[in-house]
Length: 197
Image (cartoon, rainbow, N blue to C red; front, side, top):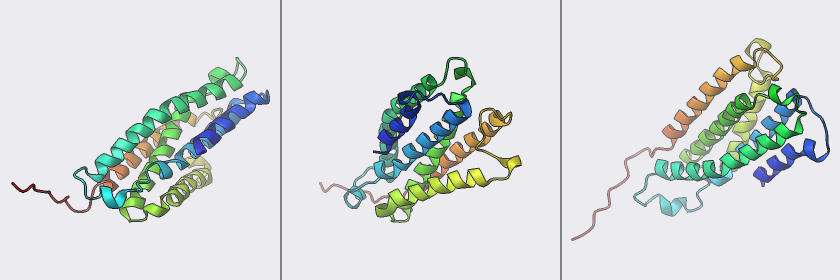
C-alpha cells in the first residue's frame, strides 16, 4: 500500500497538469522515498521466525534473501517514480532536477529503514517492526531538516551545496548497511544438527 501511495504522490503533478519547479519535485521524490522506506518493516517481518530460527540457514542469509527480492521489486518501482516526476516538469526544467542525487538520498533512507528492521528483530521486537521502522524514518527526516543551516542535508537542488551534501548521504548509506549486516547476525553460533547414522 505504501508503494502504491508513492506512485500516487508522484503522479499528482502530471494528473492535474501542475507545473512545479525542480525544488518542489525534489520534495515530492523525498516524500515518495519515505513512503517506500516505511514498507520495509512489513516486508522484512518474518511471521515464521519461531520456526525459521531453527533451520540451518542463518538469520543474516534470510535477511539478505528478502532484501534481494525487495530490491528486485523496488528498482522498477523507483524508475517509474523518477519517470513520472521527470515528465511532470517542463522540458526546460528537467535537466535541473538532480535525479542521481535524490536517488542517493532515497538509498540512505532505505538503508536506515533496513537497519531499524534488523534492530527490531535483534531486540526480539519483531511484532513492532513496522512501528520501529516508521519511527526511525521519522527521526531521520526530522533530524535532517532540523540540522543547522551550515550542516544541512536536505537541500533544494537550487542550493549550490546540494552536491556536497550527497557525500554525507552516501556515508549514511554505507553506515546503515554495516549496521544492518551487524545486527543481522545471531548473537550465538547456530547449533549444528547432526544426523544419526
